[in-house]
Amino acid sequence: MPKALALLADLGLDPREAHLALGPGIGGCCYQVGEEVVEAFLRAGLPTFRKDEGAPGKYLLDLEKAILLQAERGGISERRIYRVGLCTACSPALFSHRRDRGKTGRMWGLVMLSR
Image (cartoon, rainbow, N blue to C red; front, side, top):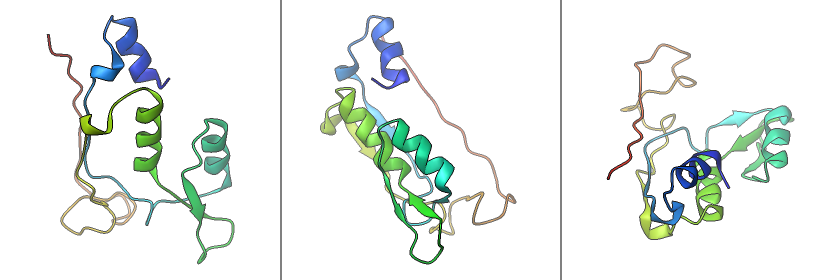
């Protein structure tokens, strides 16, 4: 079970009752990584990458797919998952650290437990 869902369970919450919201992020179309990252994802049981045909020894990693796979394994129903589905590297309206070589704005996330 992913660590965040295990933490919810430790707090007495049923992870199957969780909702998951995924905002924009670098997509599997653009997130190029090396073999060391691929090996780490394989060790974690997350084969969510493919070879980058344009760059020998490089891969394209799909982080959203990895998150969705972990959510499924943790028992979160697909109907409780909300996705924006935008790649930050592809969309010029969004910040992308990689695309813009570090000259970007900032982003933040929010986690909340409701009673």
